[in-house]
Structures are given as C-alpha cells and as structure tokens.
Image 1 (tube, rainbow, N blue to C red):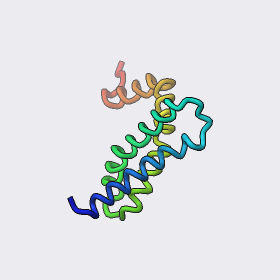
Image 2: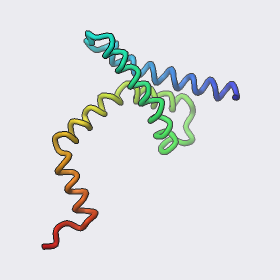
Image 3: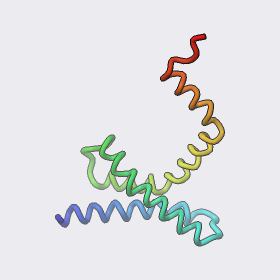
Image 4: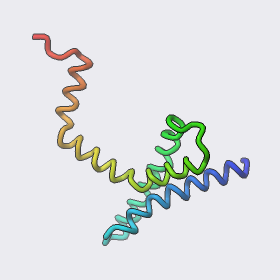
Length: 109
C-alpha cells in the first residue's frame, strides 16, 4: 500500500477518534464504560459514514476536508442519531403513513 494512502487513512482515523472524544471530554460523564462506548460508536460512525458522504458530496476535495468531515461526524454523529431516533419514536407512525400514502396514492374512497 502506498505510504500516502496509509497516512491519509491514519489521518482520517485520528480525526474520527478525536471528534468522538471531544463530546465525552466536555461532558459530565460519570461512567467510564459509557464514555468508552460513546467514543467507539462515534468513531465508527465517522469511519463508516464519513467516506460515503465524502464520496457523494465532496469527491475532489483534499484529505484535510475529508478529515474535517470525519471529525464533525465523530463529534456530532451520535447526538444527531439520538435526535432522529426521538423524532422517529414520537412521529414515526405519522411519517410512515404519509410515505405510504404518497407511494400507494392514498385512500381513494
């Protein structure tokens, strides 16, 4: 493997982990286990979701921009996931019915 590619991948991994550590470091987390889980999950989100978003929306950008995206996903990805999950929990059935009505054409009675 080319050393530039290896360095770029390491740079992205470092950005992902750094972004995932930041909310834990700034928070009032009492449990170390929960903090470790948050860091691992945030880093995994950045590692797996970051390249897909970058390939789709920023295909020709430099490695520094990709690292910034990975950092932001690591930092805010879990919080955004929790917000979306709450929306789905509170309004999921209504949203699902709207989507089904659009696809199926609604009730024509």
